[in-house]
Every structure is written in C-alpha cells, then in structure tokens.
Length: 557
Image 1: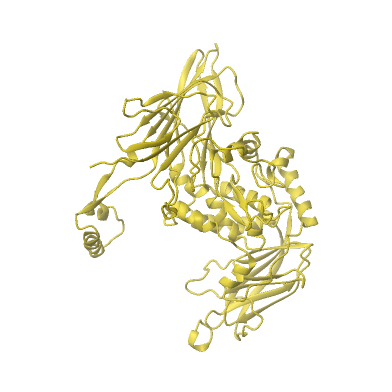
Image 2 (image 1 turned 90 degrees about the vertical axis):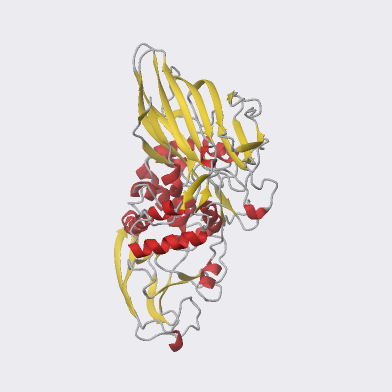
C-alpha cells in the first residue's frame, strides 16, 4: 500500500459527534438528527452566487457537478478490473474553444523504466542526508550497515512514465493560436509528484493550473445511497470520471471564478491567551482545558469553529459546548481559536477551566484558568483567509507528510476549500454528516486528499500549413488492490487511458507504445500488445472509449 493510499484509507473513517467526544475522553454526545436546512444559509448561498455569476449556478450550489445527488450514475463496466485503489486514467488533450480546423495525431508511450530495480548503496543513502554533523553521519552510516549488511539495497517503483504527445496540424493559410487544456487525475496533495510537464517542440511550455472539485462522493454508513453521506469515496473506475466530465459542467466550473463569500457577515468570537495550571496527572489535572458553552437556535444559527477539539451539540436543548486544551509544548502555538457565527448570534457565552478535555457534565472544574474572548463583526471571506493561511503555510513546508504536502498557491487551495464547504459542509443545502459538526479542520485534510480532475492551460501557436508537437510527460501511479485484502489481483498493477472523454480535439489517429523494459507480464489488456512477438506499438480505435493494461512483475533472475 502506498503512503497516499494509506492516508486516504485513514480519511475514510467516520467523524460523527459521538466519536468527537469519545476521542476527547468524554461520554458520547447525543446523536444528531437529520441535518436541518437553514433558511438563512440558503440565502447566504445565493449571495455567493451573485458574486461569481450566473454561469456558476449549477457548479457551486447546491452541489458541484459530479457530487452526490446530481442525478449522475455509472452505467456498467468494461472487462478491466475494478481496483480497490484507482489512480485514474490518462485523459486526452482538449481545446478551451472548439476549433474544427485543427487536427491532431496522438502518440502515447507507457514506459516501465521506474520498475527497473536499482542498487542504492549505504554510502549513497547517507551522503544524501543533509544537515548532519560528522558524528551524526557516522551514526547514520553504522545504522545503515546494520539494516543493510550487504552494503545497500535494491529499490524500484510501481509508477510508470507516461509521454502523451500530440502533433497539432493547421491546414489553413494563417497562423492560429489556440488555448490547450491538458487534464489529469490528482489530489491537491499529489500535485508535487504527479503534475505533468508540457513541452512544445521540445521546449518547456509555461502553463497555468485549474483545479476541479471533488470528483468522488460520499458513502453513508448503511451503503452508498444512505442520505447521511458519512464516508469519503474515491473514484473507483474510469466511469466515475466519465460521469463528472461528460456534460462539460465540471470543466466549466473549474475554468470560472471560484465562489465569493465576502458578502456573508459573521460574528466572530476570538479566544486568545488561555492560561491555567500546568498538566499534572498526579494532582488530578491530566489535561487542563478551556470550555465554552452557549445557547443558540440551530435553525437560525450556524457556528463554524477552529482550534477546538471537543464538542457537544444539543439541538433540542438549544446549547453547544466547544473545548480545547490549554496550549502546552505539544499544543497549538498559533493561538487560533475561533467561533464564527453565521445568522442569529449565540447567547449566554460562558467560559471555564476543567481538569481534562471532553464535555462530560461531571468533569471537575479547575481554578486558576482563563481566556480572553473578543467579539467583533467581520465577513466569512476575511475570517476564512485568516484561519486557512497558516494551514496552507504549514502544509506547504518541505517537511510535511509526503502526498499531503501542498505545492499550490493559497488561492488555489482556498478555492478548493470554499467549494467543498459550500457543497458538503454546514453552508450547503444538504450537509454531509461527515461535516455536520462545526470544526473547519475536519474539512482541510479532506480537501487535500480527495480525487479531482485538474487541467494545465497553455497557449500554442500553430503556423499556417504546419504542425507543432505538444507533449505532456508525467509520472503515473498504478491502480492496485491492497495487499492485506488477499484478492485475485494481489500483485497486479493497472494503468489505463481514455481516447476521447472530455475532449473536443479532432484526432485523426491515436497510437500507444509499450516500453516494458523486460519488467512485466501482461495479465489483462485490450490494447493488443504482444510482447512475445514484438508488438509494442498499436493503433487505438477511437470508438473504444477506454483502454486498460494490467500487469505483474516479471520473474527475473
């Protein structure tokens, strides 16, 4: 299992209120009923729409194209395997504006050179470590010699290198400049490794990035049709991508301006400078915490929070409790603790200290605790930017977890977050139960790991009566079944492409070349490659929407 897949698997878990309190060491909170549709929230959603324009009506609210509840659905499956972890197909190039006079020849190469095992010596591994003292480097060398007594180890990857080349031809008597869009499947956290590189006649091409919305969906606790929409679902087959791309609305939404929430007023309660006795288990203070309690009408008020990690929601009683640990050496150093109140204001806010986290009524109070609470008016855009900027900065640092590290600018991350919040969170007409609590943090991680289709945009000039070659080069992950599942596809890796999905470009011919490097045995395919007889290049039939290749590692000495 790859690191990315393990983390996404972790993200499939439930985030109900009961689990929130259990994690904080409290008794489970009352079970929530069906999410209420807030009259004021619908009005706020309309405010956001006015700012982005009528063209975004079907793309932002109530649900983004391809989101659960939009009426789309799969329609069968071809003979390819349905893998537990699906990496998405290689998509064809398209033009931003359809142009019938431009034609293309597509030649795609699947190169298995990353499968070739390479020897990494202990000396090389230690020499690559930065910032070590001589003593630390010596310790590292001794440790590697203990781990790898043969002097090193072999490594390889199950990724492949994909070269997707298009010879664009202009038969006219005048030069033509067209805007090309190259699509690819990715998450925000995988862009650092999976971003294609575009070249034009061998020279690097400058390209902008458009990020699509969540292309998966949610599964309820009682199955995929459960209206509670509790768990994340990654795209499981090329048909899932077909469903979100086929009518063009998903791409149109990605190309338009993102949602604008600057017209949505919020009342802010900012908590700063919390203090209290030090943590002392022997003295009965295992986790000194601050608890904020207040009243509200759940039908007229929505509360978004940041920095809190324990909560209790009582809709019938009209109360809410939010709590956080008093910052210690392992706590939040940024000091960001917010209640963002949308709609009617909360009432009777009180704060107090407790010996531990959670929201149990019988938790002993703790003297000598306090926190400064400031109330002021703002707007949702201002506050979300203030809250999310440190999150983006942290996840952009080089030491952050692989496959979750962000290599995009803040505006791209912020747009993706807003779309997720407005489509699935407390500001959507039908809140996904996963986000039926108030914590903004729950959504930040999901926004980073969920499947999307993204596009690179560039301008290309094709001379009169001539041709140019646009090439997209990328590292492509494999689709696979988890090793622990013991399925028939254990050890099988899948790679696939689509011939025309989402493309308006007229391709006169498409070919595929397999550079197997002697590394693979073909298990299933519909390309027509024949390694034994040297058939490594085949012509693709444009009427066949989907081509797939499933392989195992060849037995080598």
